[in-house]
Each structure stands twice: as structure tokens, then as C-alpha cells.
Length: 514
Image 1 (cartoon, rainbow, N blue to C red):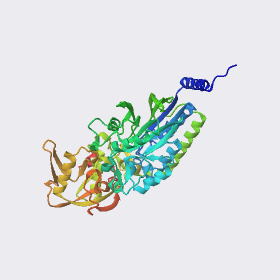
Image 2 (image 1 turned 30 degrees about the horizontal axis):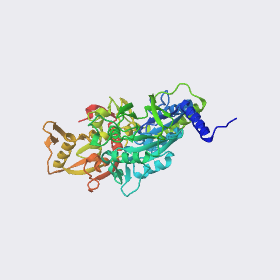
Image 3 (image 1 turned 90 degrees about the horizontal axis):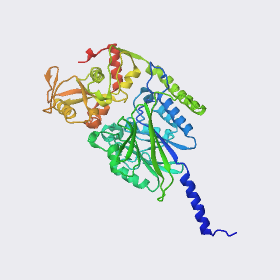
Image 4 (image 1 turned 60 degrees about the vertical axis):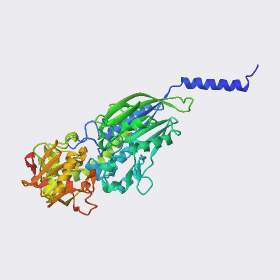
């Protein structure tokens, strides 16, 4: 019998290999993503009790484990987080996000991007959170002003032998909206230029590039502060294949911009986004091809109905962690401080006119002994429902722990400051809500008139103005009174002043507001 020569044999083997590869079912990668948890590891409590269908991160972990179990060996699951783990609930703040971090570690989080609210605490606290996480935090455009980085700029995830490059990007807005006391040692570099450089570096090493962002997605020409959002990013950096985002608190189920799908899971642990991709065999260029298959938004207020034994065990473990933290904090935050005779509601979209914002300004005025009080809309994050008000409710309204101080400011400077912020700034988060002054605003003439006690502000006289330390340090573009040595700190937080005010009133209603 005549044996084939080596060339023929090699060709035959190669042909059989290619045929097998062509006939092989493509592998699947499942991305699971959420963002902007803001301390809501338990979700919404009902009358102080566990929600009927489970806590938020209990349900999140259950979904992740269920999807992993169902995928088996046929797919790889990649779990990502889009920033702002910190700030939003008293329990999370009290434990410095330890519950959130422990639960995400239990969930098997692959990678998280740094959000602007990670800088609501002193830098050493977030650095401890990074060290304790057990999963990588990334941000390519975050740098120390003294040189070096806080974290790695990117992370490579390997799935089915395929390398996925994940670039972290934190909003440049952090320069304006972050607490200047804690952000001053960092630089937030230009998003697009940074992303281009990272994409160029990752391209030869990876098959697929994901932008894990805390930039937000906004209508065109409506991005706060004019910095890059996810839309600008994908229009400017063609190497990016997928965006998993955060920051704007929007629910985005695969919106296509410039041929790239963008996902975001709104906020407060209410949703988990799932995006499935198939990986085709490597082509002639040696790169695997990712093909989008489907996406789904999972409601974390509900739990999967049927659980495999390993999934049920992981769910029980998550519930035990959450119950433990809530039990530790229940006595501290359950104290009743007052009663609301009607709702003092809060909606982020209508924060400027919400009764709760005026109540906060009034409490700061009364309890500080100042003549004028200024708070900003972005510093207020909740409201009071009719009925008993607990300390937990107060700390939900004012979660940032800012102290209040007195600044002596001339009348002319107060008028100019309010005109600038109310008539010439698009930043709603920095919009001033004032107590102690009566204001008449002429939007067409771009002019503001302020009176106090029925009399016009004296341009030369200095008035005692109560501000919190975020505003006092130059937050959202206000003057930096702390660096100027003009901020006399009362060593009491805004939440402490509100609590004191409520206890003295006992019962509150909107007629209290001047």
C-alpha cells in the first residue's frame, strides 16, 4: 500500500481540523452588568422588613448563580460593575460599604470601574475598600497629581481562551462635582484621549474591547459640564466593541450608537442587564469574532422561582450576610425623631422645587444661628413619607456626612453668587436652595433681587451664611471658603442639624416652610 507523502498528510489533517472547527458550535459569553448601587445592598425595605421576594443583592447573586448554573460548560459569564458603590444608605455608609463589597465578592465580580461617589469619603477610606475588595477596580483616566495611579487602567478577562480587554473610564465631571477636599490629590484626564491610548495598547493583546464606564449617556449637546459621555466615546474611539456604563442613572438595553451597543442598569440595585454574545472561531487575522445574540433586563425586586441546590445555598449565604449587617444597624438607625403630617417628597428630576429641599435649608438656618442658609439640590437624596421619621430616614435624605459652617459674606457677593448659580449655570446639582432670603428672579433680564427681613441686601454688609463643607470647599464651582480660611466649622453634620430641628418640632408640616 502506498502511503501519502508528508505534505499530503499535513494537508489532510489541516482539512479535517478546519472542518471540525467549522462545524463546532460557537462559544457564548454572557455579560452581566449593573451600576450606581449607592449603598442599596438590601434594596427597598418594606416597613423595615425584608422585601417579600428577597433583598436586592440577594436576588442579584441568585440570578448570577442561576445563569452560571444554566450555562454550565457551554458559556462563560463575565460580571461587571459600573461605579458608584458608595453613598446612599445609612447602613452602607456606617459600615463604609463593607456589606456591598462583601456581597460583590460573594457574587464573583470580575471587575469594577471607579465612580465619582467613591470620592465622597477621605482617600484613605476608598484605598482600604480597594485593598479589601478581592476584585479589581480600574480607571484609566484617574491619576495621582504626584504621579502614579490609584488602580490599574484596564483588566483582561479570559473567557474560553478568548481575551476580553476591559478599559475603565471615570467621568471628568468628578473634577467639578466631587468633594474638593477628597479629589484635590487626583487628576481626571480627558476621557477620549485616554481611551484611544488604552485601546491602542489593548488591541494587539485582546479579541474584544469593552469600555466599562462611569460617564453616563445623555441627549446630544446636553452632557453636564460638556465632558465626554458614552456617545462621544464610541463616536471617537472605533476600537471599542461594547459599552457597559453608569453614572446617568438610565436604563439602557443595548442602544446602538455608531454600531456599538451601550448598556446601563439605571441605579439603586433595581436591575441587572444581561447581554449574550457568541464567539465565532478565529479568522485569518487570528482574532475571534463576537456576534451579539440577545439582551435582557432582570428585575432585582424579584427572585428566580426555581433554584438548583448550589444556587439556593449561595442565596442563603447572601441573605445571612445582609441580615447580619441590618441587625447590627437596626438599633442605631431605628430611633424615631419626629412625625411628618404630610409627605415631604423627593424626586431627583424635581429636586429644585421639592418641599424636602426647603425643609433642609430651613433646618440649617435655624439650627446654625445664621442669617442666611444655602444648600444645593444635589446634596439631598431622599424625602419623608407621612408618618414616623427615623434617624435612618434623615440619613437617607442627607447621606454625605458634610459638616456645616458659617461664612461671613458681603451682600454684593451673595447676590452675584446666587445670580451666577441660578441664572447662568446649567448645573442643576449645584442649584442653590436658600432660606432666610426672599428672592425675585427675572430669568429674561438675567437679574436677581434679594431681600432679608423685607429690606434689600446691603451690598457692603457681611451676613452670616450657613453652608456645608462640600459647598464651602468649592464643590460644583462655589468659592473655596475653606482654603481662604473663612469657613467657621460648627463640627456638626447637616444631618445632625436636621435631626435636632425635627426633634424640637416634634411634628412637621409644610406650613413651617417660610
